Length: 147
Image (cartoon, rainbow, N blue to C red; front, side, top):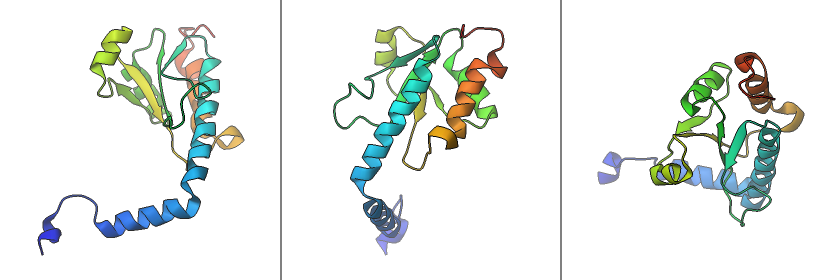
């Protein structure tokens, strides 16, 4: 009876999630997320006014999570997040519970793209295409990005 009042996800759902991930294979998920992260970093590196923070995927130790933090010169992270949200691209913006790190880096806030294995890339990657399109094109025609 006390379990009925416990907060959080019931253990049945957790078990189903573990079964689902195990069926796919954690090694396959990790390998795919690694390639996905490399792809996003490569796309962002093509835009000169973007600065990426943290280890690059090809230089990262084993276990790097599929998260990319970045800033765009002249565009506050919150504004970038709002504009991309309007275009259907969800990113986070802010300090991400790392205020001391942001202070050390001398940045007010960063944008953060969090990736997961269900995200596609390449020709079937609308979020990446929209990210680049909106950074390079329609939203920032004023050449803030100097692309």
